[in-house]
Length: 166
Image 1 (cartoon, rainbow, N blue to C red):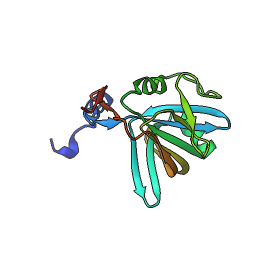
Image 2: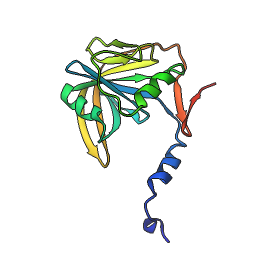
Image 3: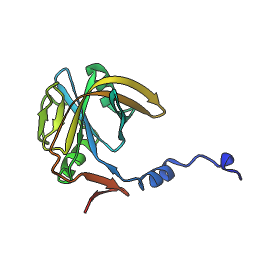
């Protein structure tokens, strides 16, 4: 059987192979008319330095995509090795938007986006493009602010577990 004739991998097969890709852990957040919501992602990347663009991939079923479209902006918090609790909180399904930070300490960017307090780094973005692709939507933001605590180690996710760089 040639490579072109092979059947597509199952979702479980694809997850298994993709879990071998080590990635940083980030939380994408937005402030939609006074309601805060965020989601843990590992699918985050820089797209361009000029103009400054970043991309996150969000499941179509997640409310965050529509909230970002309505608010026209979002922030990305790059988590440090000490922020597993924040990653787990924002990965938990069934959470609802809240009017303020609740279980995880947060702070505000100058543009009014919520970020995780003490994160390794954060980027505040205005919405640049929304590109539906399969069961996910690629959300591209134009970076309009940055900050964070650079004197920390990153939280890394590999083989379905958190890891630290040593």
